[in-house]
Length: 210
Image (cartoon, rainbow, N blue to C red):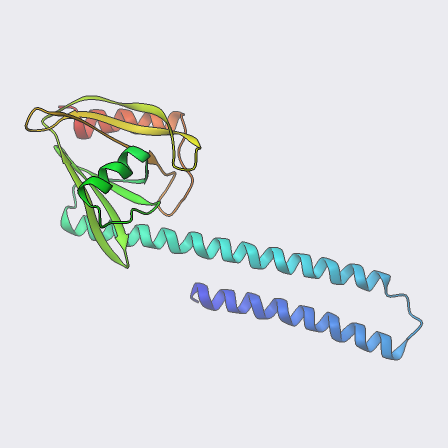
């Protein structure tokens, strides 16, 4: 059953339950006008609240599932081009947005991107209308530092960003930074902690620093 079908079943089940309660009130009122319906009103309120919570939860889950499938589709498209890259779900920092605005001014960068790290280069990808789009390619002859920095995003929130200081093949220094998402499809960002430290160590040891 598709997510849309499951949501339709849930929606109509809730509507059916609300309709049954409404009909029950009508029947009780018609057959026993003097009956105390205070308990029935409490049941109706609970049913309405539960229904609303279920609908909101289903909508949030559906959006999360859609984002995850989009990231998975992007990962599949990138791996078809180069199956050896290491994919890292990310979100742009202001520095990265400025870089994209400079090299690709026609692109409106979204909130979810994916880095594909290779041995001597990394590419930044985004899913644009179901099409994998490579936004940026950075190449290096060596790296100076791979670490973490506290960065303020466009909304004024401070977060922990992965920062790579590297030297281009023409011997000019450069830097690339991005926030790291907790998982494909997620909008939550990794903070300082074991997972981020492990990412920095693995990235520096296995993919970049030669």
